[in-house]
Image (cartoon, rainbow, N blue to C red; front, side, top):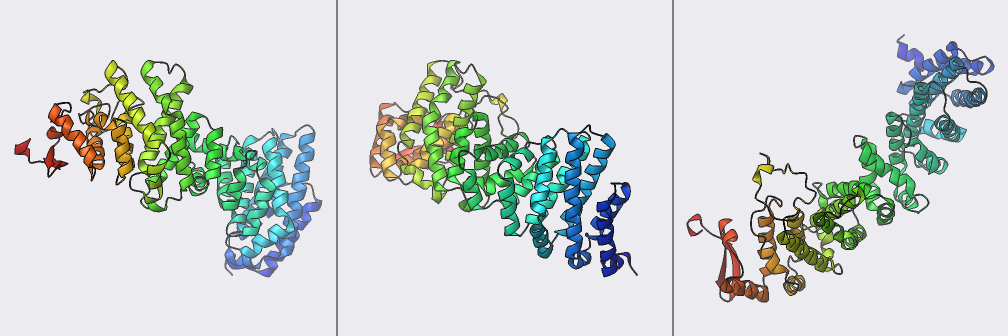
Length: 492
């Protein structure tokens, strides 16, 4: 008879149960570990998992309970390294058996839940996590196996998810995500991701609970290779405006940049129309940009003497990048064209940045240092404001797209002349001339007053159109309207 068929036979099932039961009345030894390993191995076979009796799980539960009690008793006295090591090995194997029992088996998931495995396992994990036991690697092994069990238990089983959440949220989950072992943190992130749903995310947004979300975001920043934390943030956190606002207010500026980078990446997804970011989040970020945007100006005066001031400016720059992406013809965010004073704030900031850059040589000044551009077109400079002015112009162009009211507002704020003055190539702002042309097109389209203003500037010689012509565009009056049109090389 094949070994796997023997493992799945009722007699083998009964013998294993009896062996597990006997270990309860004996002193812990390597033989008990071998019995658990045999049970674990048998549970890898679907046929055995489907046939295992409830009595076997009940015996396993008694083993888990005894191991938990013995470990606590041993640790309350002088720790015997050998005894503790064996207890931790037995615990890890017990968790492995529980983990294997749940694989694609709803019946076993429900049985383990009903027998109390969730509470008992979480109690052990809490003890392991909070006590400075010897044999740290053995501790991590037990933690990993116990958390993997919770993950397998929760998959596809709402009652198990809810019980795990109720018994571990928020304190134990937070402690597990703060463990110094990377694998433990990764498995804990997996459990959190599996348990989360819309109601639980809203629960996390409460001020007293937001620390768990902040820890996830910290992991996104410090350990970006942990895929589960990124999935938690993008698939759950970013869909809740309450949680985004709660996290943002409790974050350092460095952490805010990480959050904004995740939002930006989500907007860049192929199916960006279904990015899942609610309009209320976009409105909140627009307001945040308006409140904090002045911080960027400190970079020109040298008053950014502390790292925190620099991080505040970098947050503003990241906010601008996100707003540019949101208003790039994503219909669900085009309401930002009417967001109170967003356009005014952006135009005024552009005017200030432009004026500061022209007043003296500083971080906002135009440059022709093209040696800083690599062969692939990327900037090698470490300046934090690279492309900042170009992106301000890009946002203005987006906010004025097919919006006569905003077109007029830019003219009234004298922003049109500033944009015209930025049609020159600037190595500190790659593509600024292209974004300026884009913005001018949107400002002139079907707007006679803006067209007349540009025409008058050309007649007076106030505006320099040589840069536009060098880029292959011509400003031309036709039937009373001003057109920006491409021209042939021989006309340049």
